[in-house]
Image (tube, rainbow, N blue to C red; front, side, top):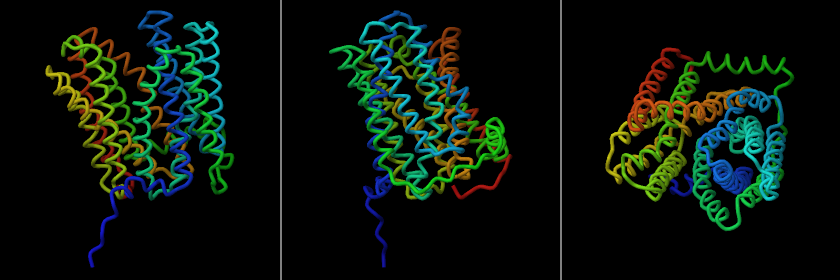
Length: 413
């Protein structure tokens, strides 16, 4: 008797059979839409107040660098404490930051240094929230549906990335930036309510196992000893560091190479987002994680090759296609890396390993932006992107070879 394959819809949405994940997904989508609204509104407010691209870079650096510096301590906290309680406290802190920004902006008291300070506050919150949220996924869906849940989270993130900026543009034009910050502050109520409504088994965090620094050291040592984890994290560092040059230099490429304006920039960014969403859906449709390690490497190499091709393209619609391919490869690579790291991490170590994921993914961004700007000023924008793409291919390939040489037992992934 032939066995019928389950319909694509049931494969795609199988994590939704878990009540806790349904709550989390809905709350996070609302909150992330608000977060993207705030991101766009902050950029517009800073530029309106200062007219300086340097100020924009300073705010971006201030919001990311705390993840790089304190992310490992956030992962340690996730392993030692109650993840749901930590997430609720982090959401409350982020809500306070957004409401403070709204109050300052609506009262006319906002200035660049207050905005930089509040950006650092949000970065500190994210240093705790990001690894805890990543490690919390398995608590909601189990290991069987983990890769599906991570893929659906990626599709949610990229969908919010489309909806949030569009709403922000309308609100900023109609009534100003302060109202975007207020909407974002209120959006945190959705995810706080979702977390509070979850039914979870009693948590069993690690008992007091030495000092925080010792706990962090254990996580670093574990990641270093495991050749596969070391390979994944090494290739993430390379991809995060060099792939950021694409977004940083995209306006220059559109203007000077392709000879188009803001509308074309929108098309290219939309194409990148569309490729990202497709990648997340393809991952969500996978029945199991077997073979994912191989496709992670292929997509990582694809990131660098797509950047190389984009650097040499002088045809607008070819550049649109390459942007979609790059978006697909990036999200596939990041989501596959997330899944494989979680599957290889013991429960007691998951928060710290996901902290390393957050540090490599987000903490490298400010340094990548600085490198891209420096390379473009010394060379040209196309040459800088081509160089970054070549280094990405080289780095992903080298970290893969070294990871295999490093050994370590491997699950069938």
